[in-house]
Image 1: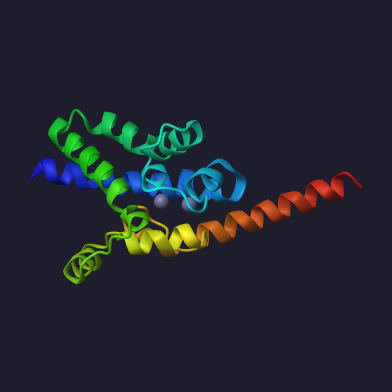
Image 2 (image 1 turned 90 degrees about the vertical axis):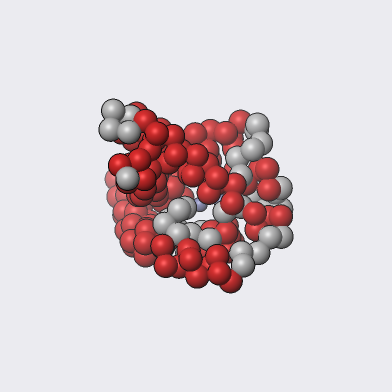
Length: 169
Ligand SMILES: [Zn+2]
Ligand SMILES: [Zn+2]
């Protein structure tokens, strides 16, 4: 039981930190994620971080950093739980990009994911097409708050740009 709880907590907290500390801020202030992960007409291997391209790997590592650090912190609680969490997280990275292979989630799979608030490949693909929606790489509960976080950070960037413009006048 402690193993499953550790794995779930690792994925939930990891997705929260990855979304709010890396993914959303990167969409507002950075270029790396947008240029590598949101590039159009790429292969499954590219989106699923199976490509050895430098920018793909770097974006993948930065996004995975919270899961790695949490795994190190939870190791004393349950090493098996950490390994299961990492394995499930990695499988979800591959699975959520199977849209690029033309796969479709069966109806029962979609219902199960909806019940557990898990992001399906279809939902994640919405984010690939439109960067203001479809947040929460693993859990859909982070979608709405992430959109608010995105709006707030965009506003702050705009204000910062205005202040710099005023100061330079
Ligand atoms: Zn993706
Ligand atoms: Zn993104």
